[in-house]
Amino acid sequence: MDVLRFSDLCAQGKARGKRVFIRADLNVPLDGAGRIAEDTRVRASVPAIEMALGAGAAVMVTSHLGRPTEGEFRPEDSLAPVARRLSELLGREVPLLAHWVDGVQVAPGQVVLLENCRVNRGEKKNDPELARKMARLCDIYVNDAFGTAHRAEGTTYGIAEYAPLACAGPLLAAEIDALAQALASPKRPLVAIVAGSKVSTKLTILQSLAHKVDQLIVGGGIANTFLLAAGLPIGKSLAEPGLVGEAKAVIDAMAARGAQVPVPTDVVVARTFAADAPATVKRAADVAADDLILDIGPETAARLAAQLQAAGTIVWNGPVGVFEFDAFAHGTATIARAIAQSSAFSIAGGGDTLAAIAKYGIEKDVGYISTGGGAFLEVLEGKLLPAFEILQKRAAG
Image 1 (cartoon, rainbow, N blue to C red):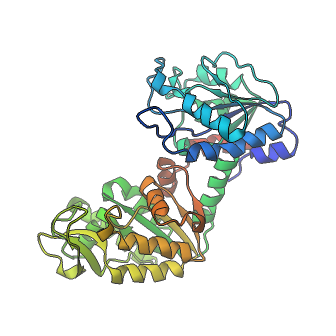
Image 2 (cartoon, rainbow, N blue to C red):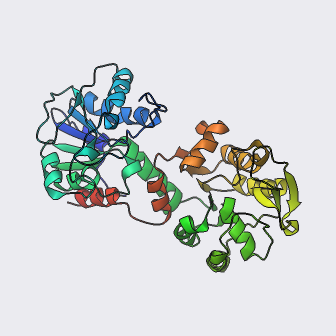
Image 3 (tube, one colour):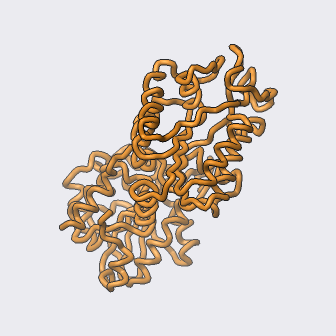
């Protein structure tokens, strides 16, 4: 993807003395006392900020936090906890500025955090007047927020239209490169794992991948609908019988290319959905009317693991069972460890996927862990994200 990269501008000395506006993704979870509960996104924002400071720029950083009402600032919407954490990570004070749209005082070598951008009227709807005002604040606009790249808002799209220069920060550039490696020019075989509760929420992703991948592994409630499509019983398991036709169409599209949707041959079932429910391994053909399928069986898990070991590229979105319950976690654990041990380039994204990666401690063994949930899914659907689109336009002149 042809976009300007902030790293190149810095290396060329083009950021020295310039005013740099960084749109980061600092939308972190807060606990009941208003403290940051998990700071991964804050830590991920540091390289772009340090790059700008090292290049001698005057640095402004902003982000949204939560779901504030435009024009109505509340204390719980404040980025104050983020400012404190950034100060610790950067080893310097990071002042937090409110009412910043009409002007920001910041000198080269300094960094300031601009208060929650979604409090500004017109941010969500990408108001051109707001976008122009923000663009006048800077010489260089840097988008480093992949988690919001699927939204055309004032700080993710509009400002990029009007800023003198618009480029991708190191985090966004890394996402672009990883997605291109996994989807645009993958090493084959390309295996995708798509799991979740409903086919309907990921139908367009499944349809898109059916024309790209060599193997499409489905899990969770999605797999149950595919079991129905294969004529197998699923008892009282979560499924969408009304989408069996769409599931068959995906299987047929894959088969027409000589590709596969591996259907489970064995499953783990229980009578109730509970952590302490007795787990029973059954052949997929033997599921009873009162069974709930809560995981793939060991035979299926071993077969899929072997396929992942032989893959060239792996795209992973979603655990294949109810991995939060230990009795139904074997399938996801087996898949996770197979990905970790595979020589394939792997990219993983989505909240539940990241939770599984953390649970099994394989963070360092996954090729790239995507920072965006919705944005990652839209790329899998084959969509051109608004943030990518505008950066490409600006790079093209």
